[in-house]
Amino acid sequence: MDEATSTKNSPSSNEEMPNSEAPLWQYVTKIEKPPSFAAKSSGNTYFKCNYCGKVYLGSYSRVKAHLLKIVNKGIKACPNVTPSLRLEMQRMHDQIENDKLERAKRSRIPLPPPPPGRGPIGPIPSFQRQEESDSTNPVDGKRRKVIANSTIKRAFQNNARYELDSRIGRMFYTGGLPFNFARNPYYRSSYSYAATHSIPSYVPLGYNALRTIVLQRERAHVERLLRPIKDFWLENGVSVVSDGWSDPQRRPLINIMAVSDGGPVFIKAIDGSSELKDKHYIARVLKDAIKEIGHEKLSKSLLIMLV
Image (cartoon, rainbow, N blue to C red; front, top):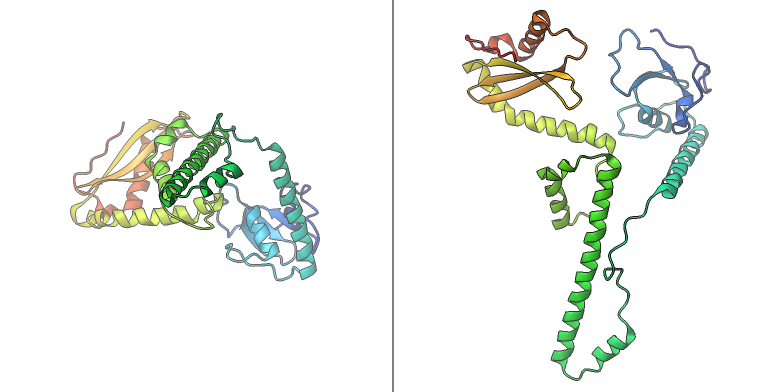
């Protein structure tokens, strides 16, 4: 295996200085793709641990899990990292994380204050409590208590709604989300579900969960829904349909779909930005799609639409 050389049990000598936001990179050596390994995916790199010598593919999160021996991260813990060295790495990592939190606090912009008359509700003044307690009519006292409680409750709810609106708006503005996203039915239903269900200690989905676990679960669910349609392809036949269009970045995309009596099924979209879209290229794209679907499932009268 073609690997870069490194000094054992020391930071990488042939690597640049570690990123200030990712200090544990200095304990591994980035290398070129070994011949027997798969191609790198976006954001990942091959690295060799300076302590155990094993080669892995991944991002900084996998480096951290390997060296700090974090379980359930899809990578084995390094057996040669001693407890004292692990403690040193952990302190280094925690210091960076604390510094990031402090910078985030200093740069945090406060939310807009509530409008006049909708500020925080303080405790009930003592003279009001005394007035309520002086009533000799139990019915009047109960009515006053219900009215006071409902007024305070509405005030707190109004303030909570105002702050929630501000937080949602801040999410759109700082994340660069298009305002049209607010029309997404799942955006609205997610907030409605959270408002009507008590889920103690719930933490919103993070970056890694969204791009791995939840995405895989959603894809598997869609595949199960499409299974009845695909099962009929072998019996009734299927046609391969292709069309071209441009996305908002004006990249030329080619859609590949499979159409049968059960309905159309999207197969994939191909970015043809760097290709000459002549008959040879289109034929190659369609042949690859037919191989993926299975030539034995194609209908006798294959319909190909090229737009």
